[in-house]
Length: 204
Ligand SMILES: [Zn+2]
Image (cartoon, rainbow, N blue to C red; front, side, top):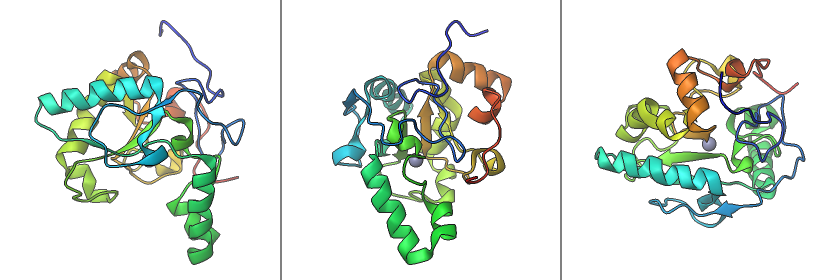
């Protein structure tokens, strides 16, 4: 058993589960403690921010990667409801809703709005936000080590029927060191399975 339990519904909780069945509540939630981590930034404005707990953990994660000779950049962090709305609406207008739903979360349904998640880059831009990023040193290192700093690769390979998203080797989510380590040791791939929640392959 874990020593501490957290809410799965409160977006200020490090265990909040946001997926295509579970929007943020409130839908326009804004973290109260947004902060810019002292890491190598490949993002600016709100996208360079995380909630303060995640920012602190990210600093440790990036520093540990650097010790191992791996360059990691913060490619995209916090995304406000308003930004997500603009992004999603842009996809809908050019591609239609069905295609937009495969490319972008609907407003209020993105983990990026919680402040608990961010995307990494490798500083060189190779395979940025593409499946082949999985083979880049930053992603290989993160997959093997992120749990030690409280992070999980939120959308693993071949588990899109549970998470609702295809493999995103760049998208890390903070849940705390204890839970992330427990998940890794037990070989559980998704937060939905770990917390006993229903699969969320698509919007209801
Ligand atoms: Zn992401």
